Every structure is written in structure tokens, then in C-alpha cells.
Image 1 (cartoon, helix red, strand yellow):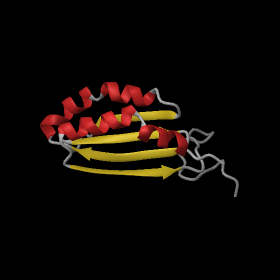
Image 2 (tube, rainbow, N blue to C red):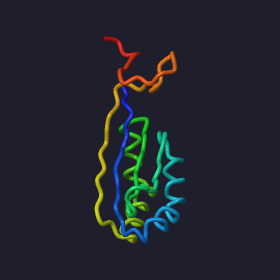
Image 3 (spheres, rainbow, N blue to C red):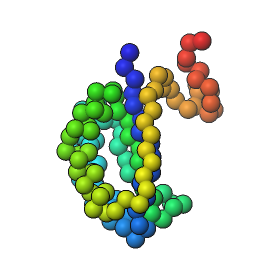
Image 4 (cartoon, rainbow, N blue to C red):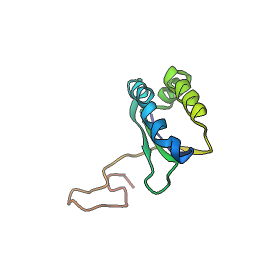
Amino acid sequence: MSHRIVIAGQIDVAPEKRDAALRDARALIDAALAEKGCVAYAWTADVLAPGRIRVFEEWESQADLAAHFEGQPYRGMLAHLQGVGILNAVTQKYRTDIVEPVYGPEGRPRADFFTAKA
């Protein structure tokens, strides 16, 4: 069974460098999104922390993520961030075994996994 991989994290840079870091990363983000198996790849500004970039990625498989780590978009991203100056970074990867909508058939948010078999 193939599991999707989700990466979530944060990268801290000097607050005065964050907007340029995001703007100048656009081509790298677009390149990652074009890679096989990339479902989502986003860097966003954290409105509560002036120098923080939030990272969110979703990959169809471990093999697709491994290929990304060997490719130019990832190497370019590392070089870009090193040039900006990383102050701190924390990223985690998660392997999913079930994916379903937050809202159930009745239109209310649900914390339980209502389509999972017990």
C-alpha cells in the first residue's frame, strides 16, 4: 500500500529578508510543483512571526519524495535559503494511512475518521 507523505515546517530568516526570499523562490516552487508526484508545495509568510516561512508539501509516495530530494528544485531551494540566511528551521514528515475530508456528509467538521473501517 502506498502512503502519501506530508511535510510541514517552518524556516526562520531575518524579518527584512522574508518577503524577498518568498518572491525569489517562485521559480523553485513552480519547478517542485511540476515534479512527478508533487500534490502540493507551498511557502507562505507566517503573519504572526515576522521572519517565519511556513512550508507545506504533499507527495504521492516516498519514491516521489526521494526523487525530489535528488532533483534540481530541492538543490536550488537549499542554495536559495543558504543565500538568504537560515536562522532556524524545523520540518517534519508524516506518512498518511487515510485521507478524507474534514467535513462529513452532513456538512459539519469531524475530528474522527468517519470513512475508516474499524
